[in-house]
Length: 162
Image (cartoon, rainbow, N blue to C red; front, top):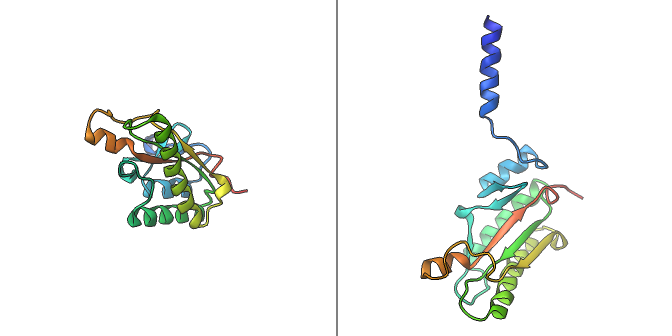
């Protein structure tokens, strides 16, 4: 009877554990969580607490943002995450072609900061999404501010050292 009780307790504890995202080690997952990433689909995305926002019509990083990205990239590199996808976004004010180019510039500047921390730039894909994926309404100042962002996404392929 004691063995049955112990077995039931072990099963309950095991059921409470978070299942790892396939393709990542426990060390990588811990580093991602500690740096503000959240599991999304089969990868990890920098969450709301770690969001990278930009002023209107700008693609340059503030010193604190650059420092945070360098620290983040250093940590990812140390746990064997060799790459990422960096997606730049823009709000819907202005011409679509301008916003597309601006979103690409934002992605590029984050990619460059990550590469300066030792990550291989060939393993960091920078993509400009323009205004195609807003997270908030572009009808308000607050919504537009949230849409001027860069998102960093890490997939299982990025977690494999080459």
